[in-house]
Image 1 (cartoon, rainbow, N blue to C red):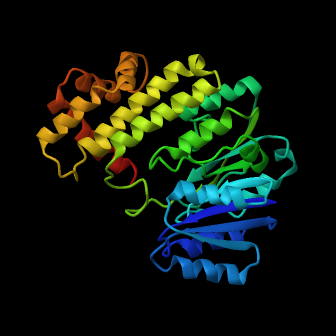
Image 2 (image 1 turned 180 degrees about the vertical axis):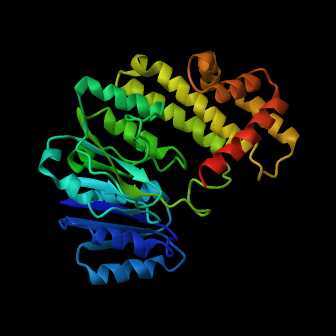
Length: 340
Protein backbone atom coordinates (compact mmCIF):
# COMPACT_ATOMS: atom_id res chain seq x y z
CA UNK A 1 0.00 0.00 0.00
CA UNK A 2 1.03 3.60 -0.64
CA UNK A 3 0.47 6.36 1.90
CA UNK A 4 -0.07 9.82 0.42
CA UNK A 5 0.51 12.57 2.99
CA UNK A 6 -0.95 16.01 2.23
CA UNK A 7 -0.29 18.89 4.65
CA UNK A 8 -3.19 21.34 4.37
CA UNK A 9 -3.07 24.99 5.35
CA UNK A 10 -5.54 27.45 3.82
CA UNK A 11 -5.62 25.55 0.53
CA UNK A 12 -9.35 25.68 -0.16
CA UNK A 13 -8.85 26.91 -3.73
CA UNK A 14 -6.69 23.93 -4.70
CA UNK A 15 -7.52 21.05 -2.37
CA UNK A 16 -10.26 19.41 -4.44
CA UNK A 17 -8.00 19.29 -7.49
CA UNK A 18 -5.18 17.75 -5.46
CA UNK A 19 -7.32 15.04 -3.86
CA UNK A 20 -9.19 14.28 -7.09
CA UNK A 21 -5.91 13.72 -8.93
CA UNK A 22 -4.96 11.04 -6.40
CA UNK A 23 -8.41 9.41 -6.44
CA UNK A 24 -8.09 9.20 -10.24
CA UNK A 25 -4.96 7.04 -9.95
CA UNK A 26 -4.89 3.83 -11.95
CA UNK A 27 -3.48 2.11 -8.85
CA UNK A 28 -6.07 2.01 -6.08
CA UNK A 29 -4.28 0.48 -3.09
CA UNK A 30 -3.49 3.69 -1.22
CA UNK A 31 -4.48 5.86 1.70
CA UNK A 32 -4.66 9.64 1.77
CA UNK A 33 -3.84 11.47 4.99
CA UNK A 34 -5.07 15.06 5.01
CA UNK A 35 -3.26 16.85 7.84
CA UNK A 36 -5.19 20.07 8.44
CA UNK A 37 -2.61 22.33 10.07
CA UNK A 38 -4.91 24.89 11.70
CA UNK A 39 -6.43 26.25 8.49
CA UNK A 40 -8.63 29.35 8.87
CA UNK A 41 -10.36 29.12 5.48
CA UNK A 42 -12.77 26.46 4.19
CA UNK A 43 -10.09 23.74 4.07
CA UNK A 44 -11.29 21.82 7.18
CA UNK A 45 -14.78 21.37 5.71
CA UNK A 46 -13.36 20.32 2.33
CA UNK A 47 -11.14 17.76 4.09
CA UNK A 48 -14.14 16.27 5.87
CA UNK A 49 -16.20 16.25 2.66
CA UNK A 50 -13.41 14.35 0.89
CA UNK A 51 -13.20 11.79 3.69
CA UNK A 52 -16.98 11.30 3.61
CA UNK A 53 -16.91 10.26 -0.04
CA UNK A 54 -13.95 7.86 0.07
CA UNK A 55 -13.00 5.54 2.92
CA UNK A 56 -9.32 5.66 1.92
CA UNK A 57 -9.11 9.29 3.12
CA UNK A 58 -8.28 10.09 6.74
CA UNK A 59 -8.42 13.62 8.15
CA UNK A 60 -6.28 14.76 11.08
CA UNK A 61 -6.84 18.22 12.54
CA UNK A 62 -4.13 19.96 14.56
CA UNK A 63 -3.26 23.47 15.69
CA UNK A 64 -1.07 25.39 13.28
CA UNK A 65 2.47 24.11 13.71
CA UNK A 66 3.92 24.38 10.21
CA UNK A 67 4.39 22.05 7.26
CA UNK A 68 7.14 20.00 8.92
CA UNK A 69 4.98 19.13 11.91
CA UNK A 70 2.09 18.26 9.58
CA UNK A 71 4.24 15.91 7.51
CA UNK A 72 5.69 14.35 10.64
CA UNK A 73 2.17 13.70 11.92
CA UNK A 74 1.48 11.91 8.66
CA UNK A 75 4.64 9.80 8.93
CA UNK A 76 3.74 8.79 12.48
CA UNK A 77 0.20 7.82 11.45
CA UNK A 78 0.51 6.26 7.99
CA UNK A 79 0.40 2.52 7.31
CA UNK A 80 1.70 2.13 3.77
CA UNK A 81 4.87 0.42 2.59
CA UNK A 82 5.69 3.52 0.54
CA UNK A 83 5.27 7.13 1.66
CA UNK A 84 4.54 9.92 -0.84
CA UNK A 85 4.22 13.64 -0.06
CA UNK A 86 1.95 15.90 -2.10
CA UNK A 87 1.42 19.59 -1.38
CA UNK A 88 -2.21 20.67 -1.30
CA UNK A 89 -1.81 23.18 -4.14
CA UNK A 90 -0.17 20.64 -6.46
CA UNK A 91 -1.46 17.49 -8.17
CA UNK A 92 -0.23 14.22 -9.63
CA UNK A 93 -0.49 12.17 -12.83
CA UNK A 94 -2.81 9.12 -12.94
CA UNK A 95 0.12 6.72 -13.38
CA UNK A 96 2.33 8.07 -10.54
CA UNK A 97 1.19 5.63 -7.85
CA UNK A 98 1.04 2.76 -10.33
CA UNK A 99 4.70 3.16 -11.21
CA UNK A 100 5.58 3.08 -7.52
CA UNK A 101 3.72 -0.21 -7.13
CA UNK A 102 5.35 -1.94 -10.12
CA UNK A 103 7.25 -5.12 -9.37
CA UNK A 104 10.62 -3.77 -10.53
CA UNK A 105 10.33 -0.95 -7.98
CA UNK A 106 10.05 -3.17 -4.95
CA UNK A 107 13.73 -3.92 -4.32
CA UNK A 108 14.93 -0.33 -3.95
CA UNK A 109 14.92 2.11 -1.04
CA UNK A 110 13.89 5.23 -2.96
CA UNK A 111 12.03 6.10 -6.15
CA UNK A 112 12.68 9.45 -7.85
CA UNK A 113 10.57 11.00 -10.63
CA UNK A 114 10.32 14.27 -12.60
CA UNK A 115 8.00 17.23 -12.19
CA UNK A 116 6.34 19.64 -14.61
CA UNK A 117 4.36 22.86 -14.41
CA UNK A 118 1.35 21.25 -16.10
CA UNK A 119 0.39 17.93 -17.73
CA UNK A 120 1.83 17.46 -21.20
CA UNK A 121 2.40 14.68 -23.69
CA UNK A 122 5.31 12.45 -22.74
CA UNK A 123 7.03 9.94 -25.01
CA UNK A 124 6.89 6.61 -23.23
CA UNK A 125 10.49 5.77 -22.47
CA UNK A 126 11.85 2.71 -20.72
CA UNK A 127 15.00 4.57 -19.71
CA UNK A 128 15.62 4.46 -15.98
CA UNK A 129 18.74 4.98 -13.91
CA UNK A 130 19.62 2.68 -11.03
CA UNK A 131 21.96 3.65 -8.20
CA UNK A 132 23.49 1.19 -5.76
CA UNK A 133 25.74 1.62 -2.72
CA UNK A 134 28.69 3.92 -3.60
CA UNK A 135 26.76 5.30 -6.59
CA UNK A 136 24.46 7.01 -4.09
CA UNK A 137 27.21 9.60 -3.65
CA UNK A 138 26.11 11.10 -6.98
CA UNK A 139 22.65 11.78 -5.56
CA UNK A 140 23.90 13.19 -2.27
CA UNK A 141 26.15 15.52 -4.26
CA UNK A 142 23.08 16.75 -6.16
CA UNK A 143 21.19 17.49 -2.95
CA UNK A 144 23.92 19.94 -1.96
CA UNK A 145 24.85 21.10 -5.47
CA UNK A 146 21.77 20.75 -7.70
CA UNK A 147 22.13 19.39 -11.23
CA UNK A 148 20.12 17.05 -13.42
CA UNK A 149 21.00 13.40 -13.96
CA UNK A 150 19.86 13.57 -17.59
CA UNK A 151 20.02 16.54 -19.99
CA UNK A 152 16.25 16.36 -20.54
CA UNK A 153 15.48 15.55 -16.90
CA UNK A 154 13.43 17.80 -14.63
CA UNK A 155 13.77 16.43 -11.15
CA UNK A 156 14.41 18.04 -7.76
CA UNK A 157 16.66 16.25 -5.29
CA UNK A 158 15.70 18.57 -2.45
CA UNK A 159 11.92 18.35 -2.61
CA UNK A 160 10.13 15.56 -0.70
CA UNK A 161 7.54 15.49 -3.49
CA UNK A 162 7.92 13.48 -6.74
CA UNK A 163 9.51 10.70 -4.67
CA UNK A 164 8.51 7.55 -2.82
CA UNK A 165 10.14 6.69 0.52
CA UNK A 166 10.18 3.43 2.44
CA UNK A 167 8.13 3.88 5.62
CA UNK A 168 10.22 1.21 7.36
CA UNK A 169 13.41 3.21 6.75
CA UNK A 170 11.83 6.45 8.00
CA UNK A 171 10.84 4.71 11.24
CA UNK A 172 13.99 2.63 11.65
CA UNK A 173 16.23 5.71 11.58
CA UNK A 174 13.68 8.16 13.02
CA UNK A 175 13.95 10.43 9.98
CA UNK A 176 11.61 13.38 10.32
CA UNK A 177 11.28 16.97 9.10
CA UNK A 178 12.76 19.76 11.24
CA UNK A 179 9.96 21.94 12.69
CA UNK A 180 12.47 24.60 13.79
CA UNK A 181 13.25 25.44 10.15
CA UNK A 182 10.95 27.54 7.98
CA UNK A 183 13.02 26.98 4.82
CA UNK A 184 15.33 24.11 3.90
CA UNK A 185 13.66 21.39 5.97
CA UNK A 186 13.11 19.42 2.75
CA UNK A 187 16.82 19.31 1.93
CA UNK A 188 17.68 18.25 5.48
CA UNK A 189 15.10 15.44 5.37
CA UNK A 190 16.33 14.12 2.03
CA UNK A 191 19.97 14.30 3.07
CA UNK A 192 19.24 12.29 6.22
CA UNK A 193 17.32 9.70 4.19
CA UNK A 194 19.95 9.34 1.44
CA UNK A 195 22.68 8.76 4.01
CA UNK A 196 20.80 5.71 5.34
CA UNK A 197 19.92 3.94 2.08
CA UNK A 198 21.84 1.92 -0.51
CA UNK A 199 19.64 2.02 -3.61
CA UNK A 200 17.55 4.38 -5.72
CA UNK A 201 15.69 4.11 -9.01
CA UNK A 202 15.26 7.28 -11.06
CA UNK A 203 12.35 7.19 -13.51
CA UNK A 204 12.61 10.34 -15.71
CA UNK A 205 8.90 10.81 -16.21
CA UNK A 206 6.94 13.91 -15.09
CA UNK A 207 4.31 12.68 -12.66
CA UNK A 208 4.06 15.60 -10.24
CA UNK A 209 2.66 18.99 -11.23
CA UNK A 210 3.71 22.12 -9.38
CA UNK A 211 1.39 25.10 -9.18
CA UNK A 212 3.45 28.25 -8.66
CA UNK A 213 1.26 31.15 -7.53
CA UNK A 214 1.61 34.27 -5.41
CA UNK A 215 0.44 32.49 -2.28
CA UNK A 216 2.81 29.55 -2.54
CA UNK A 217 5.50 29.08 0.07
CA UNK A 218 8.36 29.66 -2.39
CA UNK A 219 7.02 32.94 -3.77
CA UNK A 220 7.37 36.39 -2.26
CA UNK A 221 9.26 38.17 0.51
CA UNK A 222 10.13 36.36 3.73
CA UNK A 223 11.86 37.61 6.85
CA UNK A 224 14.02 35.53 9.14
CA UNK A 225 16.01 33.86 6.37
CA UNK A 226 19.32 35.02 7.83
CA UNK A 227 18.69 33.21 11.12
CA UNK A 228 16.98 30.25 9.46
CA UNK A 229 19.83 29.55 7.05
CA UNK A 230 22.46 29.88 9.77
CA UNK A 231 20.67 27.11 11.70
CA UNK A 232 20.08 25.09 8.54
CA UNK A 233 23.69 24.88 7.44
CA UNK A 234 24.78 23.90 10.94
CA UNK A 235 22.18 21.10 10.87
CA UNK A 236 23.51 19.97 7.47
CA UNK A 237 27.07 19.94 8.83
CA UNK A 238 25.95 17.96 11.89
CA UNK A 239 24.28 15.26 9.74
CA UNK A 240 27.39 14.89 7.59
CA UNK A 241 29.59 14.66 10.68
CA UNK A 242 27.30 12.19 12.45
CA UNK A 243 27.44 9.93 9.40
CA UNK A 244 31.25 10.38 9.19
CA UNK A 245 31.13 11.63 5.59
CA UNK A 246 31.94 15.32 6.01
CA UNK A 247 35.40 15.08 4.37
CA UNK A 248 33.79 13.39 1.36
CA UNK A 249 31.33 16.25 0.84
CA UNK A 250 33.29 19.17 2.27
CA UNK A 251 33.47 21.19 -0.94
CA UNK A 252 29.80 20.42 -1.70
CA UNK A 253 28.87 21.61 1.77
CA UNK A 254 30.67 24.93 1.42
CA UNK A 255 29.22 25.41 -2.06
CA UNK A 256 25.80 24.92 -0.48
CA UNK A 257 26.66 27.51 2.20
CA UNK A 258 27.59 30.02 -0.51
CA UNK A 259 24.26 29.31 -2.18
CA UNK A 260 22.58 30.07 1.16
CA UNK A 261 24.54 33.28 1.49
CA UNK A 262 23.46 34.43 -1.97
CA UNK A 263 19.86 33.43 -1.21
CA UNK A 264 19.82 35.50 2.00
CA UNK A 265 21.28 38.52 0.20
CA UNK A 266 18.80 38.31 -2.70
CA UNK A 267 15.67 37.10 -0.95
CA UNK A 268 15.86 38.98 2.35
CA UNK A 269 18.50 41.63 2.91
CA UNK A 270 18.20 43.34 -0.51
CA UNK A 271 14.71 42.12 -1.43
CA UNK A 272 12.77 44.88 -3.29
CA UNK A 273 9.86 44.60 -0.83
CA UNK A 274 12.02 45.04 2.25
CA UNK A 275 11.16 48.15 4.28
CA UNK A 276 14.64 48.45 5.81
CA UNK A 277 16.88 51.36 4.92
CA UNK A 278 20.11 50.89 3.00
CA UNK A 279 22.06 51.63 6.20
CA UNK A 280 20.15 48.93 8.06
CA UNK A 281 20.94 46.47 5.27
CA UNK A 282 24.63 47.39 5.49
CA UNK A 283 24.50 46.59 9.20
CA UNK A 284 22.94 43.20 8.43
CA UNK A 285 25.70 42.49 5.95
CA UNK A 286 28.35 43.36 8.53
CA UNK A 287 26.76 40.97 11.02
CA UNK A 288 26.61 38.29 8.32
CA UNK A 289 30.34 38.74 7.78
CA UNK A 290 30.88 37.44 11.33
CA UNK A 291 29.29 34.05 10.62
CA UNK A 292 32.19 31.62 10.88
CA UNK A 293 30.71 29.10 8.43
CA UNK A 294 30.20 31.76 5.77
CA UNK A 295 33.75 32.98 6.35
CA UNK A 296 35.07 29.46 5.73
CA UNK A 297 32.80 28.98 2.74
CA UNK A 298 33.98 32.18 1.04
CA UNK A 299 37.43 30.60 0.71
CA UNK A 300 35.81 28.16 -1.75
CA UNK A 301 34.13 30.89 -3.77
CA UNK A 302 36.17 30.58 -6.96
CA UNK A 303 36.25 26.76 -6.83
CA UNK A 304 32.54 26.14 -7.18
CA UNK A 305 29.28 27.70 -8.27
CA UNK A 306 28.15 29.80 -11.22
CA UNK A 307 29.86 33.04 -12.23
CA UNK A 308 27.09 35.47 -11.07
CA UNK A 309 27.19 33.94 -7.59
CA UNK A 310 30.99 34.17 -7.51
CA UNK A 311 30.79 37.88 -8.35
CA UNK A 312 28.04 38.51 -5.78
CA UNK A 313 29.96 36.73 -3.02
CA UNK A 314 33.21 38.50 -3.97
CA UNK A 315 31.57 41.92 -3.70
CA UNK A 316 30.07 40.95 -0.35
CA UNK A 317 33.40 39.61 0.90
CA UNK A 318 35.14 42.88 -0.08
CA UNK A 319 32.42 44.91 1.70
CA UNK A 320 31.32 46.44 -1.61
CA UNK A 321 27.74 46.64 -0.40
CA UNK A 322 26.46 49.00 -3.08
CA UNK A 323 27.60 46.54 -5.76
CA UNK A 324 26.17 43.68 -3.67
CA UNK A 325 22.81 45.49 -3.56
CA UNK A 326 22.82 46.08 -7.33
CA UNK A 327 23.71 42.47 -8.22
CA UNK A 328 21.12 41.18 -5.75
CA UNK A 329 18.37 43.28 -7.34
CA UNK A 330 19.29 42.18 -10.87
CA UNK A 331 19.42 38.55 -9.70
CA UNK A 332 16.01 38.88 -8.06
CA UNK A 333 14.40 40.15 -11.26
CA UNK A 334 16.02 37.35 -13.26
CA UNK A 335 14.81 34.67 -10.83
CA UNK A 336 11.29 36.09 -10.78
CA UNK A 337 11.07 36.03 -14.58
CA UNK A 338 12.41 32.49 -14.71
CA UNK A 339 9.78 31.20 -12.28
CA UNK A 340 6.75 32.82 -13.91
